[in-house]
Amino acid sequence: MSSSSDHLAAISERIKNGVAGPTETVQTVLSWFGAERRGIWVVKQINAALDAHDLMTEPSFESTWIDGPIRFVRKAKNGAADALLDPTFRLGRLEAANKEIVSVKPNDSLDKVITLMLTSDFSQLPVMGGQRDVKGVVSWKTIGSRLALNKLCTQCKDFMEPAQILSEEVSLLEAVDVIANHDYVLVQRTDKTPRRPPKVLHLWPPKLLHPGRGDLTH
Image (tube, rainbow, N blue to C red):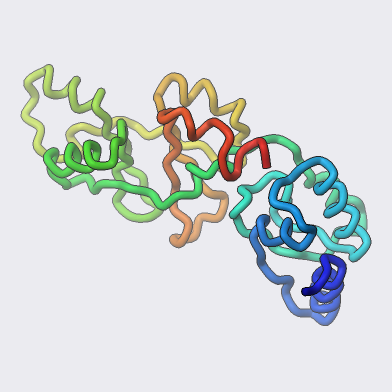
């Protein structure tokens, strides 16, 4: 089995030859160093090895989700790479923000919305016209408030409210107030391609904000 140095040396040589650096998961890179978590000593070891081979990762392996992809690139000569190292715990690092989204369409029936929310144990569902087109959010609260007013509502769009959307680059600390006030946020990837639509991060169940894959313990 190749050592971590062998892996990085091969990647460095590949980039020197004009070939784009490979994409790996953080978990895979950790395995090269015989580790499963991003402890302080492992992080120092990986950074030292990257420096030795004139490499860096985009995004930083320190801040992205542990099963998220990182790409190896040539390290900037002016020290810009050091500025990219950010210990802030960001929304994109949470496992909940990296799961496939469950959504409904504006013209879906109320029965379908309620069925999905009950079977999936969701308190909210994003209403989307496409993978990148968030129309709003429907929740038990919005459904109850409309029905309490005896409004004639039959479609999902009749129960919508504006969605709370934050970038995956926003820190968990910054997101706390939004989550506390609305019970959720939609986490929008910085990559806007259709393959990577917004993800839902709920406040509940609480385990989503406690130790697990991709949390502070990594």
